[in-house]
Image 1 (cartoon, rainbow, N blue to C red):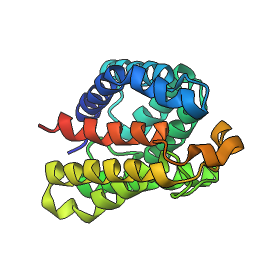
Image 2 (cartoon, rainbow, N blue to C red):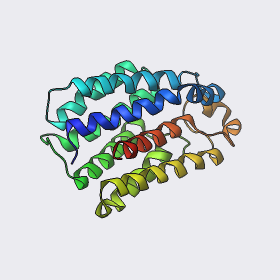
Image 3 (cartoon, one colour):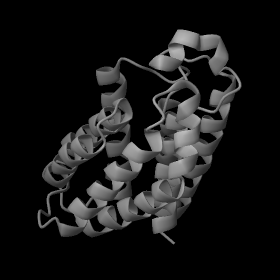
Length: 206
């Protein structure tokens, strides 16, 4: 069951991973971006974890809505805004729910993914975080009947494979798109963040 407590536990795990990979994310972003990816993601997930740990609101939708605002203000970057879109999509899906089943949780992730694609006008295959998130969400929904741990483990594997695939993609968005040919062969930093999100959630279920 997804509750405010389990949500906070998962985000703490994600925050710990992004903190551990902060310098690596900065290095990846320095190739074709602003070089602040590790800093903004560390700050954003740290703030979101603190917000959820102190959150008294039991409605998952309301909590995620508030968390989206906290994350967006704490991670002032394009990816910070994109992930806030995802949180808002999940919030709408879970509005009025204090405890969500695995099926409801998987559906919420799908709603968050859809909101990102609509608001960011992006899709998988464009060398972004979506290349990790989309296969992860698909795997999560495909393995719901296997239970939470198995489903999120499968999602983490799919996210890692999706992230690795960005090496062979050409950048379409952001600064990297200005020198698109140079982006081939380089791992997309945003996709690594997507991988860390699902690895963190899976680890929180151990």
